[in-house]
Each structure stands twice: as C-alpha cells, then as structure tokens.
Length: 222
Image (tube, rainbow, N blue to C red; front, side):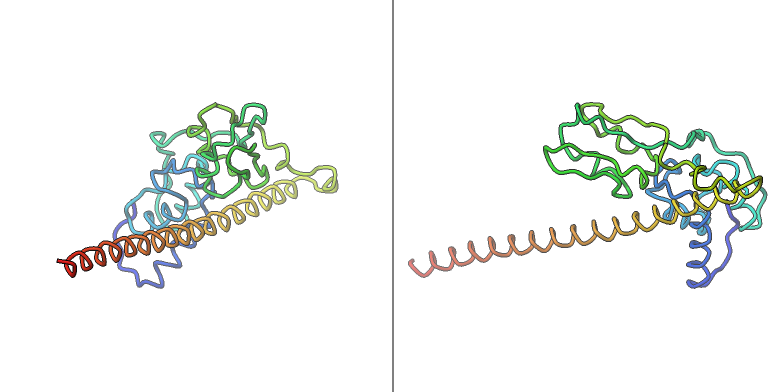
C-alpha cells in the first residue's frame, strides 16, 4: 500500500483519475471493491494495494507502480488469476427473461425485458462474469470476443509495432467506453432509488394522513 501522504482534495481527485485511467474498467469487483473507480480511490487513499486487479495483470501493476513511485510487485492471486479476454453469451433457447443478469451487469451491456429473451451487446461487455452467478437456468457462457479482435482486413497495412499500438488503442477505447457506461449506470440507479424513495415517502405520508384523519374524526364523534 502507499505510504500516507497529505494531499489536497484537488490533488486527490487528480490522482484517483490517473489511477482509474490505468485500470482495465472491467468493473468485475475481483479487487475487493465495487468497481475500478472505488478501487482507484482506495489505492489513492492508501487503503488498497496496487496488485489486486487480475484483469490488469503485471502490465497494470507496473503502470501503477510507475505512476505512484513505488516498487512493482507480483499480482496478489488471492484476488484471482488473469484470464484471456472473453465476453458473455446468452443461450436464447434457455433464457427465461428473469432480468437477473441485466441487474448484475455493471455497464448495462445486457438488454431485454421481463419474460423476454435477453442478449449481450458484445462490444460493450467487459467480461466481468458478474452475470453468470445470478442466472437461475445457467444460460450464460463466456466466449472469445470475436467482434473485439483487431480488424486485420481493414488494417492490413499495419506492420510490426503499429499492430501493437493499434491493439492498445482499441483496448483503451473499450476501457473508456466501459468507464462511461459504468458511471452512467451509477447515475441511473441513483436516480431510480431516489424516485422510489420519494414515492415510498409520499405513500407513507398519505397513509399517516389517512389514519390521522380517521383518529381525528373518531374523536370528534365521541
């Protein structure tokens, strides 16, 4: 973990953003936090180590070490092991439309409606695997991301390091999209929860007012 340092609020925010920019944005929670931004915040505050992200692997750990001016270290395998990139696939013949996977997806990459077949927006799937456990009929599998590999047909002119540069750009673009979708989902959930609370409060007050009026009318009759 990082040694404790006194940072201004502005410095802390900037550091969190830099750390978050390095993280893979899978939002998988393997690090022990609910997403990449919370993990980045924990690292910046000295509450988490730089080696808790299996998807980021050794490359991510090295980048974090350089950014923070600390020594690189091996991945803490207590949080899991690195895996090849994969995306979720829903078997349409088995899916019962329970919506549990939709609720579990941290980047809203699954679409569908209750009692209707669901499907994955493969280019937006981060491969977090969080949709697998909630599925009551085991209709979700992880597959190779065929639509996310380098388009060699349209990029046939790339050679040597250019291929690596292009691949890294695609990787960054995917991470940036995932970050945006994750943050939008958090805002949507916050709005929905606020709306539910307001409706519940309104209903509660209506019930209270009804019984208050009932008690008042009963007292008057006496």
